[in-house]
Image (cartoon, rainbow, N blue to C red; front, side, top):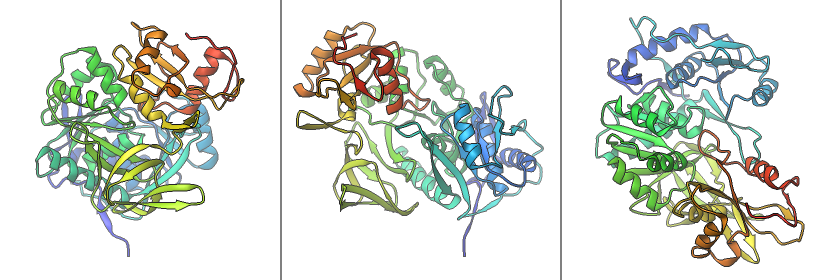
Length: 464
């Protein structure tokens, strides 16, 4: 027999669950808005939630769950992505808050205006096994891959995360915590650490998604303390380099790529609160955290455990227990220190071999981005080259440095075989809204600068 779980963790329905332009929205109001939106959903078909406003996204997610509809969360709203969704879900509709959004012949339902009459609201209870959200990752190739989450799995995941974060803050719970985020709600990290951390963890989120440093500072200023900033290494570095005045922040959450200890320490000094990194993946959800300035060791949430398996294709690491209802392989190479603690060595598909030596692109990127004057950078390894010798290439955003200076700095940090012969200066890297770079986008960037196709590198490509 399955278990029904409440839609919200809030026991006091008068408490804020969100902030809109600095104005609190109560849990009771949220339930009323979700019920109104649920009435407008069709009886059949998945809901492609494209709402940019985080509050309208959350209302749409809750409405779909209440109606037993699956929410599809794509990595973007590009016409090709939506056309593929329409092929696999022919009855799907798009829920949007942008009237001008083109959805490739997919029916569009405009998100309901907020603030329905909040009278006589009741707390919905959702079957734990009900499929609630299907996250569609862009992946290294850009081809969306579906990962469906049950309501019960999401509840267990977020409860474990909320408990861990409350311990960091030395608080009994996250009640009263205000969240400002630079990441979209459609991404697994943005979904879990903003919308669901409010619905299921007791916090309250700001409805916006500020990008520019001044906008982030303004968004933080308009919500009350204690407040948390949910961001990525790329967004955090940009924020700190901008030099804007920042209000005190009680907690910083960071994910999507490993963070350097130097940047973590700078963030804690500038913002005033502890910085916690979250390790996870779309397949398993949030898995572990670390306090970056204190240790490189990650500790799993709650009942989650990790073990190593050896197979024909080599070693792999599998997480199980807690909210991970079936053992799930991780895409990373770990160094285990027991079933709950580990060090992250790099992604299994991130490991590269050059002249008989092995390292990871994450390791190379770490050192590239630690160079003073480099505001953003990424290594890329061609799949083949004309002369038969594979050498890494570095793309950098470094207005005050030339290629020779970047190479010289890398020689002091890396083994000689990993120092790039070519450093390509660019005005910006083609990052996704979460700050991620895909193999496909880097391959296209290389093609723009040097020509070739399918990763083939020309024999004579000059430094830029």
